[in-house]
Image 1 (cartoon, rainbow, N blue to C red):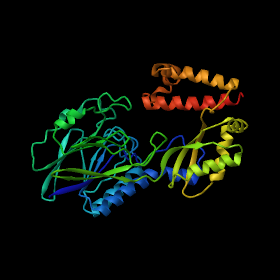
Image 2 (cartoon, rainbow, N blue to C red; image 1 turned 90 degrees about the vertical axis):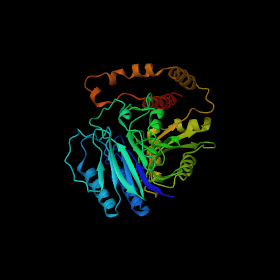
Image 3 (cartoon, one colour; image 1 turned 60 degrees about the horizontal axis):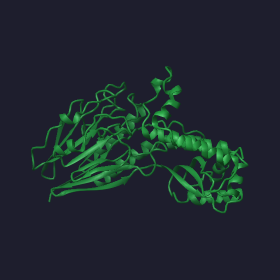
Image 4 (cartoon, rainbow, N blue to C red; image 1 turned 180 degrees about the vertical axis):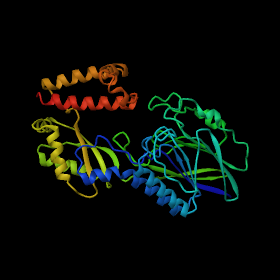
Length: 403
């Protein structure tokens, strides 16, 4: 039975600047900023070792439309490695690295096929069968129209048909909606596999045939937590099999720390260190203190959250694997009868009733300011949720000092 094997990757965001990572020692900050390159090298190494038939890159290879020289050099080197292993690569650029950007171009080797702004077809012959790959690159940053209508319907049953599409499900409000599509529209094309990009959360929208978001290859902030990577896909005449391959140089995560029985600072430090042992790889972590009884609440109230964080970072130090504590927060104590507890609950209850419109009204001074609006994207539901969580954490920390 004939088969083809390929890699489906998307959203590399090479040379992402990792904004907002304050306090990191310089060596570790440089390590973090190099993580997208490390993840990309892991992908290329796997492709060569596994001798896959080809590689698909579905948009946002670069983090910005003005592609940095460093990012282009690293990508060009990766394509040269694939060329040396006789592995073709197919590229469709996305909203972050659209074709109208300004950059000094590197010439890519002949094994690389780049889709233009119109939907087109690329063809290769693998294992005695023709493989047709369809895709397009973003001409500009905002592609609002439904490009799916321009994809041809598969009409050759003895061949494999693969669609590459950097876009989002119509009606999905969690991200900016570009090149929208519905699952019904994708299935109507009768392809054997849909290789999607744009959404950084790994997910399989449909299994037979597969419609797949691999997610990005390296997390870049707390909302992109957990292991990241790509899919190695095998297609046969009877179906598909997918294997997820981890490429993360480090991961973002959060950990819950139980404060049961914590009366003294050294007990708290030990509890944090025990929780951190759950992650056996380089990571950037948010710690959430839970199970806070009256004794633990009194302990934490004696010192600011910033000082607790500073002490914990010193204790964790330069241990291996590298672990950076990005933040600590404190859940509501199990029992708290003080006036500050009543005040906290009252204000938080009021905030819980706020709608997205209410939150946007609170934030309008920032998002409607003439000088700042051009630097800010439209707020998504995910970002509003993060703002709500941060506001709750800060409020609890500040009001707890009133006890």
